[in-house]
Amino acid sequence: MDTDNNPTTEVAATTIDSEDTTEAFVKVKSKKTSKRKREMDGVDMEAEDSVACKRPQFPPISGDKLKGGSDEMRKVAVPAHRYTPLKENWLKIFTPIVENLQLQVRFNLKTRNVEIKTCKDTQDIGSLTRAADFVRAFVLGFQVEDALALIRLDELFLETFDVTDVKPLKGDHLSRAIGRIAGKGGKTKFTIENVTKTRIVLADSKVHILGSFQNIKMARTAICNLILGSPPSKVYGNIRVVASRTAERF
Image 1: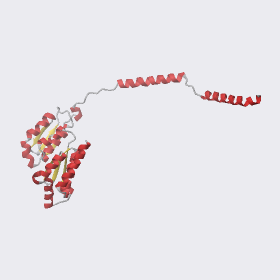
Image 2: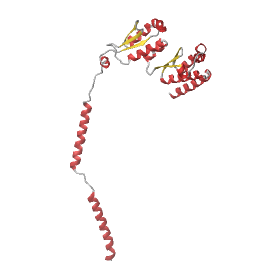
Image 3: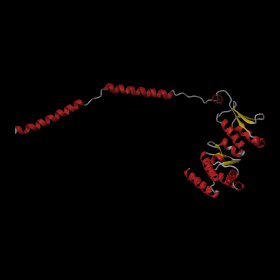
Image 4: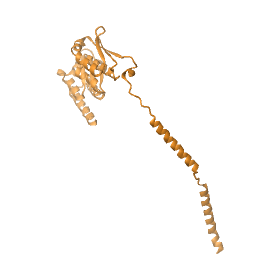
């Protein structure tokens, strides 16, 4: 009986010893380290709170300081055939630039340039670029009402390209390409403008487009297809498909 009981007691003793050794190897965190860690966390929280409280508050910068103390000026050259329209619409051009953008504007008779200059009342430094784009659009041949969109709205651009950049044409071939863009009585040009929501000016072999980036891309693609010889009916269909896709996307 004694011999039968000995192996079980030995196994139990070994299991107890192994449990004691595992318990002996468990690391116990001391109170000093935990206390020190709490103190460090408290210091970090206080530092973050102090940084958040001491965040600097700067007043808005005035327009003079943004300009660097010196007035800036832009010049827009006016060709001879736009002198009369500029003279007739000068009040419509002068009013938004002076009253809305707080800029100074004049037409230099010697250099034949429209000069736009900032002053002490100018608050937005980007108004000078808007005014220059507005005058440039009118000089290129756009109506004053259409060019005013460059002042009132953001993300509007002007793009200019030549018909010969798309395809090298000369003589009657060039004239027929320009005629396909315009259409009978300007019908094709008006259709492209209405579908793509842009404004197009045909000046000899130059094509000027005013609109947003996506709309300019659609109008340019349609005009290039007309220059390359596509019939207007096919171009209309392609424009309407693309325009409906963009409308559904947005």
